[in-house]
Image (cartoon, rainbow, N blue to C red):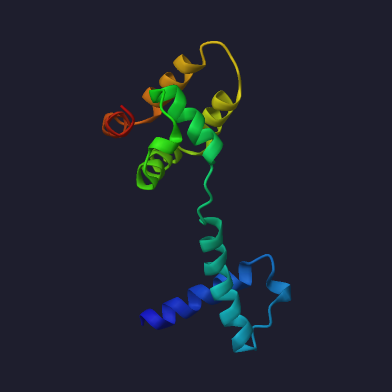
Length: 131
């Protein structure tokens, strides 16, 4: 019963898909390519690309703790990068712009951004690594 419902649902999705005219539903290989292609597309959209490069990370460490990035271990750098990237894409972009710019009150804006978007536990981890 479940198999029949699954096949019916898949056929309905394919019939309603905008690229249906390109599909040959008589050929089972094209049908399987369609299904696996849809799964692969969602996977490719979730590929991880570091939004915080080493230059931004170095500038953040310098502002946050007045340390050099060279004094940290690799796992510490990656932990900091992971915490900062988990603020979300928009907040990471804001942080990137703040760190690359030379505005007044830059440090205060960075601290405000962190306090607004990180949990206390994440801020404590940053403090432990960088202080």
